[in-house]
Image 1 (tube, rainbow, N blue to C red):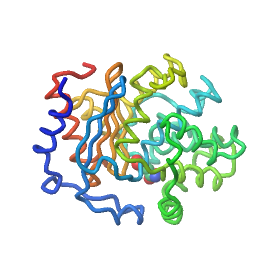
Image 2: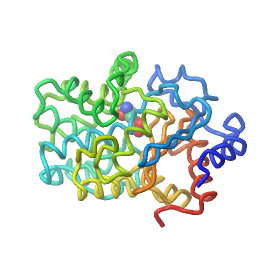
Image 3: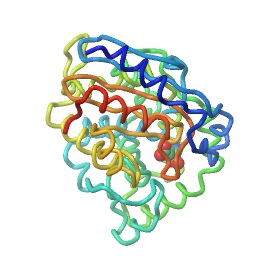
Image 4: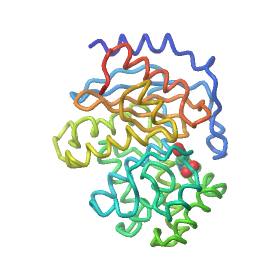
Length: 304
Ligand code: GLU
């Protein structure tokens, strides 16, 4: 497959400057990003790389980090994770409080904020130094020691994170947060602040296209079964209340973040990351969704 030719075609056909959308501004530090950034990077399971645009510029991966937090929590807590968080799509915005009250503080899934807060609580219970150990895990699967938090973004969100603060307190009231809420929130904000480029993101997520094995060493980081489940959750829950639309248009498991990044995985084939900060009203990158839709349309292949 001529992936580079296909990516070139996508670049010509997706003019992010003309597409609608707004850069996320509820985290003040994210509002400073130029709306016209656009990059894409595809990483195949045999280590080939194809890209265009600002694919090597780092951005805030935000909710994409929820997949990495879940992966680490599964390594520590195994199937017990599912006693504290569900596996159903929410059909609600990423930060909705409503469902939590109806469902007694058990978040619908680990890829929305409430679920990720419970996952962070699990990690805080297990890790001696959660931030450092989380970063160590991410660096390992990224095969890159330069991956880091963006403290400015984390602190900016912490100062304004009233909604997440309300949410974690509500879950705590139902007994599903075991640690101090401020400690868990602080850790959560840092996990969201991880910075990666499309190249680094695609490189990190190739693990999920490769049945949980690092492509260089063959080391099995996640079992085949867990990788299958994580991909299934990305498919059904990775795009806030637009997971159906993403499945319909793109047909790959994936996860988006309010920093404008989207990563998608084609098992046995590739992982692909795209970045364009303007978000649609559901919180997903407008140009990113279109670029991925073109990718699976032009290649004529998706998991469906
Ligand atoms: N840190 C963001 C928040 O909690 C993540 C949101 C996202 O990317 O979906 O609001």
